[in-house]
Image 1 (cartoon, helix red, strand yellow):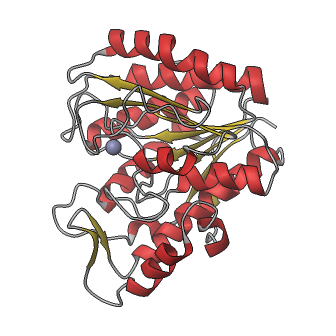
Image 2: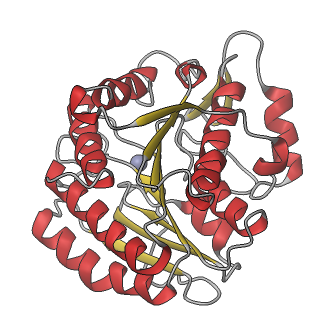
Length: 313
Ligand SMILES: [Zn+2]
């Protein structure tokens, strides 16, 4: 099966963190506009199903899940993590569509219905820890996808690879003591949330952090990824690769200071697909994380999707 599926849902536009918040519905509209271009006519579109509480609880503790469900407002806004992470009346369905898309994406690649999958969903998830929402993220759909592949599909080795400019502290926290789950992250350091040192290695070297200095350009990024991240993923020999695909390391992004170009997102995606081809029949589930320059988000998404489809850069 050679198809690339895109999972999305209109409900993901109804998570409204408030005026001026960088994690805006406009972000997803930008991604969807990019993917609806005629150059991507080969994409097969699917409505994201609703995730289940059981799926969420593969990563998150029950008390936290109950708290999020109970706090979900009928009107107005409720803060979950200071002012950074906010729930509006549409947020519960939005995050459950994020979770449902991620798990349906795992089903699709493992059942042979697709070669790879992109989840065009929001809000992002990688800062959400097992017991708390954080950094625009409520539930951690990439970590849930990996845990779902482990628990439901009985895979023994699942890798989440995260090139968002921020460290995915939530994914790291969820995986730290679980040798079957591998997390590799490149991220700017110093930067929010402050975790992601090389010394944070997990219980069995199942965590690989590649902190990058502010101003890091294509040349340094590619050298560090090639030396420190790709060999570790290859050694782990994943049966599925989940990508936390954030595009805020783009040179145009207003929230960070790396200098990646569209071509770098193509490059890193292609490298990850090569490993997936070697270790797991190309099975990749990519999930949208951050990206706050609309131009950078569109350019990065386009490059990432061209790679997922096997098109030339
Ligand atoms: Zn980010």
